Structure formats: C-alpha cells, structure tokens
Length: 164
Image (tube, rainbow, N blue to C red):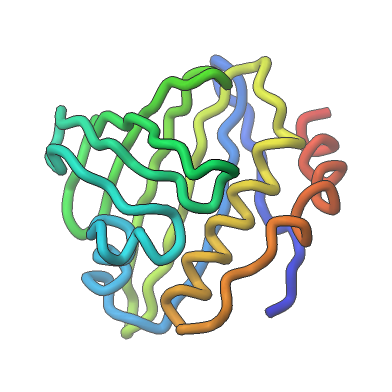
C-alpha cells in the first residue's frame, strides 16, 4: 500500500469540511457492514455497544489509540446502506462525522467528511483519518493494519497547508 495524503478541505460557514475518499471493489452492503457492524469495526477502529439507531448512543472502544479508551458517539442520521452521521464530544472538542456510500457496477465509493470548526487543528486531524481509512481498507482485504507513525507527523504539513 502506498501511503500518501489525499484529502481535501472545503470552506464552510463555520470552518471547513475535511473530505477523504476511498474506493472498494465490493457491493455497497458489504462496505456498509464494515462501518456499522461491531464485529467488523473492531478490526480497524473498535468494537461498539449501545443503540445503533438514529438518536441512539454508542460506546466505541478506540482500539488504535493509546490505552484503548471508550468514546461516546450519537447517531444523528442513518440511512442504510448509504449515509451515516455521527457526533462525539471529548477532550479535543466536538466531532461531527459523516459517511456517504455510493455503488456503481460493483465498486463502492466511500466519502468521509469531518465537519470541522474554524479552530480545528487540521494538521493533526487529517493524518489520523487517513490512517483510520487505510486501516479500514487493510481490514477489508485481510492485510496488516498500517502503522500510525507512517502518517503522523509525515502528513501534518500537507493538511496544515490546506487550511492556509
């Protein structure tokens, strides 16, 4: 796997949208399961428990993070197998996340958007999501998970410059 930053930053009324895209040769339902079924999210992000429905709250164990903490996510919107909107609040602030899936001829495109406020440290956030989305790809293909040290600080300047 070639590791290179590829996200973009779009200005919004309240800050920026960090947008990353991945493509999988797989049906949309299979990619959807990779991001919404606990036993599959456990392979690349972390397992979860709780109410997996709009308005529901999930507790997600962030297994790729130091000490593997649990974080609480609220599902704002869920339209299987195409659209998922989540938010969480932690010591780093409020995180508003969105995933859209679209399938054409057996290929599914995943568009991940992190809605950032104006003060968000894009140089810190971008490399993290590159890592997680590459971990998703590795988990889907059965490959070894990537090493976060290949993403950060190597991609920090790329993402910080997008915000300037």
